[in-house]
Each structure stands twice: as structure tokens, then as C-alpha cells.
Length: 336
Image (cartoon, rainbow, N blue to C red):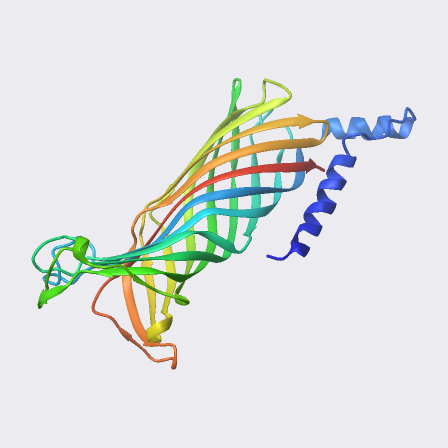
């Protein structure tokens, strides 16, 4: 993302901060508007913010029975340590969720900045004799794309000093990376499927781009949140989402060999606990949000082709993907 992406964030923040010091008038017209405001049950809010994620995207290849003693044939870890992003938010719901039952909806868009975000590491277990590591390589990882869109809709129910919000949510996420430079270590193959120790292998340097990878995720989850706003001007909210309904389409491009893998995998377990603290100042909310987004190993078909043509054939091995991300963000919202 280039520097121009900061411009809409800058103008929105200036607009929000200007709303903290409204001009007070004592005429009858404003008194009438204030009375109407008090009678409103629902309201909109718009916001922006910034945050950082810390975690990894995972890519896996499962062995065909008899190919190896390892649990996996191959695993690639793509660091996102750390990815900085800006976010834009829109919400609709009860102004006071403790006052009555109601419904709500929310939309969030996050887009990250390109840059080096840690390492990309590739591990293989090719021995038919044992589960020892046989191949290892490490490269500098560059995150190219980081996009998340989250949509939720649900109901709100007050219970004494708390409100409970069951909801359903949908998410689309895209992450893309490039691995470059670094080194590799390959254990010596003594005979077919029999390898020496990788600790005896020498590191050999690599220069240039080696591999690129992209994940596109679709999720449909159920969740609930529990919160309170009795400690005015502060409010607190804890939420949790869970689902096995996860789908990932990924593209793995081995640049040096012009070899491309297209994977279509699903049914990894998705979990996301989250906590939010909010401070209300007139019609502005300042929020601190901490969450952990996790998707266990998926499994599905892998197709093999070449970057030089569009023909792909079904591979013998199953493929998989996974995700593990901590998220920390600061948000400013204007209540309309």
C-alpha cells in the first residue's frame, strides 16, 4: 500500500476529532433535535483505525501411505511478523443494548502494507525409514497482499447488567507472499527413500526470488458476545466464534522450476476469541481490540501445472492450509 492510502484515514480522523468540541446552542430548534435524539433506539457508526498482526500462514502436503514415515510430506510456514494495516468499519444497532432486545450488523475492511514480515521456511520429510527431517530451506518473506473483510449480523438481548449477542459471520481473507534469498540444507539420500542426518548437510546459499504463495479464505461462522456499558464512559465486550465451515483456495508457484500447485482445501476448524475495551467521549468511541484468529489444518485436492501454460493435472498427494494470527488494533468510531 502506498502513502496515498493514509489520506482517507487522515481526513476521517480529523473529522472525528473535530466532533469532540461541538458548538452548543440554546435555541428551541436544537432542544427539539436533542429530544428526538433521546427517542432514537438505533444508530449508525462509522470508523477507522490502525493495527498490527503477528502470526503465520501454513501450507502443507500430506504423504501418500508408504511414501514417508512422517506425518507430513512437506510444510511451509509464511511469517506475518508483523503486518501493519489500516481498517474501516461500519456498524448498525441499538444505541443502548441494555435497554431492550434488538438486532445489529457490522462490516469491517482491513488492508495491510507490503514489506518484509519475517521468514518463509520449507521442511520436507521424505524418508521411508523414519520421521526425521530430510530437507530444510529458509528465505526472507515479503507479504505482498493482506486483505480481510468481515461481516456479521445478529441479535442483542439484555440480561440485568449484561447484554448477550448471538450472531453469524462471514469472512473473506487474502494473503500473498514472496520468498527470496536465504539458504537450503538437504540430507544425503543414501539409497531410495533412505537418508542420512540433515545435521551433516552443508548450508548452500540462494539468491533471488524462489517461491510465491497466495491464500484465499472463505469462512461462515457462528458466535456470541457478552458485554456491559454500566461503567460509563467505558464499555467491555468479549466474543467468541467457531466453525468447521472453512474453505481455502491457494496457489504455490515454484519460480525456479516453473512449477505451479493449485490447492482447494476445506473443513479446518476456525476459532476466534476477541476482547474489546471502549471509551465514549460524547459521540466518539475509542476502542482497543485484541483477538486471535486460528484455522487448523485443512485438507483437499492439489493440481499440478506449469507457469508456462494453463493445463493442470490432479496430483497424487493431498494438500492443506492453516492460519494463526494475533491481532491488535486501535479504532476511532463516530456515532451518527
